[in-house]
Length: 637
Image 1 (cartoon, rainbow, N blue to C red):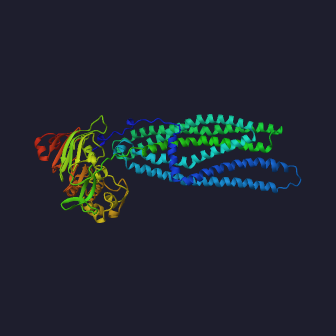
Image 2: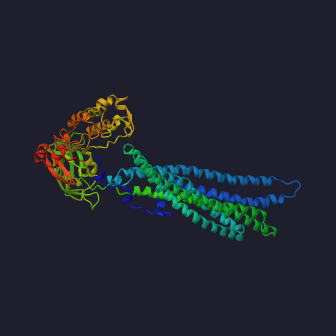
Image 3: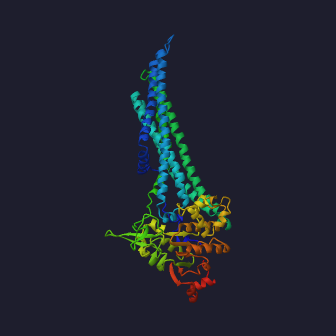
């Protein structure tokens, strides 16, 4: 039975559409730099120094070219037996200078690899660790494929920016500044001509770069949408097949893929036009300066060495301009991804203002006190404002008092719910899809907090109980079984990592899962994937029940736990379930009404209200809604 009607609608049209921006968010840059500088301060300083040394070495090499021509090569021209020793030493000096630049370039590139990977490792850790603190509501309102895209595509663009784009942009800026100073020293008028040419380059870069950046940002958003849709289709392949939805799914995918193709095409059109445009402006400038420089040389205003050096300066000045223009696309695209990464990290963690905790306890002098040893007795530790502490034994007594709840404030799902589940009592909920059955169990876990009323656990308002401690006292077996990549034993031990192998086997026996596990190729050490491939739906559910048995909680929530098991298997499992439920407070949501006949209390819900309550015999005697459901006069769905 689907629970989607009881959850917040995750349709994309309920989301706020964020306007794509091609501008740089400097707060995001500052935050990224904190990651780099905070973790790799020394390495980061070495990188900056190495970039400066590399850039200055290249500029000094060009300056040396001027001296090489004017002071060493030109004087030797026309000599019968020229002495090349000084020229040789000068060339060696020039080579040494370039070698320093090469070593510095290698050093900062090598360090940036370590810095970028370290920063990304920290970013992924922060994302995943924070994700574990987010409320269920976040995952109900965000497509899982888009979240995965943040971990993959957005992080990858961040890697390219940190390891390549930032060093190249910084290097280009330092090079341009050094070259500009050298050009002014060589000839002011030629430098002004070059600056005019650079202004034209900047206009081209702004036009083509701005448009390409805008579409690169949209491309990343479209990738997230495509990934989200692919994940949905992969998870729902059986539904797609059984309802012959292949053509419609292809049409929707084609539409999303077309949007991705369009944004990628537009981004690359502008990006690919940028480099040739700037390069050709630079080439024209190079020719123009060569002509003017030649004229100045003929009139003995400028030396040949100065002309050769100046032409090299032009190349060294215009190349960084195009380099910066090209890298800015990747920077803006990466910053857009970084904003999505930080949006996840900045999501508000699950509120928990509880202060009542669950502790081991023992009876001493007729009173319940805290114990440092495991005694098998659990108690709620309740500190009070006056400094005193009281202990309440954990029994599993749950009460709802006039509870109203809605996933959104303007749409209530539950209305005036009042019920009591006494210690060791089995309470069942029946009703149509969307009646509010699963919502009630979600409120017991505090996956969501109520708007009005009170929920008490052993007489304590559950809003006073720390969520972690509250959930430690509850066990759940859901309709949708979640298994994890690992052995069968590991999947059962997920409930209690400190459990022994004997405890695992006993839990499996209680759930009647031991027999089928032992028939697997490697028994309890059989490795399964997260989807549980190779196991039937019923077997996966049995493992989920065994996990709950190992958890051994005083309160158990069974959300259609046997709905995926055939009738014959259900009879086998039911015996194990009876053993599991013995002595516990149990909340049961059941599709098959035959499984709840022995419940002490049955609640019949409709549109978030309790219409009838009582045991099976009492409700059948009333001949109301439960009677109609049980006899088939009304279908549950």
